Image 1: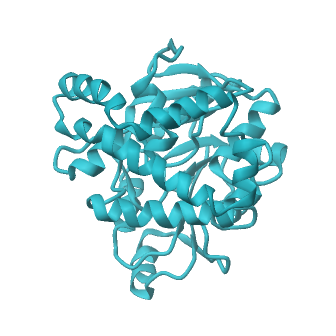
Image 2: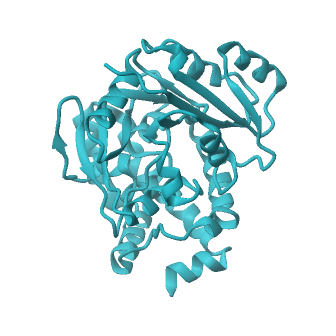
Length: 324
């Protein structure tokens, strides 16, 4: 087996030490450590956190723009500074769940040059709060589940081909998935094809327009996403992110379109805002997974949709996209 160099890119602005669990899980991989590069683009973390990070042989670069996403910001900076054949977008609140995670993730990429990326699934930790367990199933923004890879894998019947150790899937060029974060591994040279890493979704949409569409989904290479501690933590993060989206990230959008079918989109919003429409799927999934966290589904679809509506009303560009 060959061991190509893998670069982990972690944009962060950390007050606590949660990133250390990520670094430990990377340095615990049964993969040649001299073939692993860890790049942190820091937007103003606690100096003690950075001091602890340096024990894991990381490269730390100052991100004066502070934000993780956007052309020239955290993720984009880290990718261009990386030297690996493959890049992993590894947010500071994730952890690799197996010691052979890298080996499993690179397998599809090494076997098939047409595969542009490997996407891990999220581990649902039984000790997590119900809120975090639910988000581990559908993705960090429930509203986006109608387009996100995680959400669609759980809530729709997606076409996928079973291969040796992974599923082979393909992007719809007109309606690509919202994906590309939390352990997403892709070929580094693709950044030159699209120009920059403005956003996860924008990167994917641009690749699709370049006819780069095949990717792998790894069921047995999981990451634990310690996204939120509970409901109020979720609210704080979603409000901050949605506000940033409406004021900053919306201007990075060129190729990714959230609304590809207006009738379908408006019906989706109405369904979420009526609340009761999502109860059947919540009950079905709660029984299927034996996890009561799924019962939160109608409520979280309602609240995340309401947040998106509110901030859309404050953005002329978002209103134009929604109604023009």
